[in-house]
Image 1 (cartoon, rainbow, N blue to C red):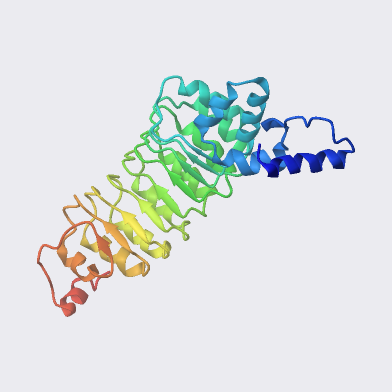
Image 2: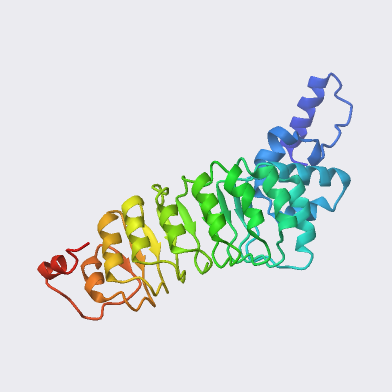
Amino acid sequence: MCSLHVEEEAHLAAMAGNRDRTLTCIELFDICWEDVLIPHMSIYLSLKDLFNLRCCSQTARRFAETALEKRQELHLSGNNTRNIDLGFQVVARCCRRLEVLHLACCKWLTDDLLLPLLTKNKHRLCAVNLNECVNITALSLQPIIVECKDLRILKLSKCQWLTTGAVDALTLHQSKLVEFDISHCGAIGERCLIIFFRKLNKLTVLSLAHTPSVTDQVLIQIGNYCRELEHINLMGCVAISDYGVHALAKSCPRLQSLMVQRCPLVTERVLAPLRGRVHLDRPSMGYNLPASQHHRLFLQV
């Protein structure tokens, strides 16, 4: 033992009034949980670490579950390991302060597993990612739509269960979204989208890729009401044309990226003026018009 440790022990013994008594070793869980272990140590433990620790002893189990209760983020996207659903039940029972929830591509996730977690954390959640969660239904969206008043990010790509009724409910209860993804959602109608985007004036990131109901009229509404828009993904939206893209780009001065691959009616006539100002996912085809012709071409917009 180094001299520093010897001196420290002697000092502590002297303060206790008994230099001859051997100091008792302090164990990990003797350190204050609330002030030290939970805020300063547990944040460095992954979910796997906490579950491994949970298996060690009754005290370790209590500590792990207390750490889960304080946890603010849960990242399980793509995790389809064996018995993950059993572990998720523990998480759903313990977590009460989640703000960020990423569950994309969790094939095992069902309404029965998800709803208890949402019920306990609905007042704090600000970001929810349910992309490609194919075994849940619109029922799981109800607490998110109605109760998550601080929701800013919602991702529902390839959720074929997302219906027009669910989007109508979003229109009524959610107006603070800054990022929204409903790519590959074919059950939503054009009129529903037009009404929905009239409320999202804070939107900065939007993905509508391969959504067949996205038309020029939808893009015009996005341009009219989502003036803060910076990034939009329209890949595979075969119904949009130069007319709608021009209206969108003209109305959104902060636009930084525009994805329009596999949009056959969108041509270089509308993309050429945007090059250099906006990142495009389609290379230039060498087709350019004089600036005066750009103005005449879209004068009707």
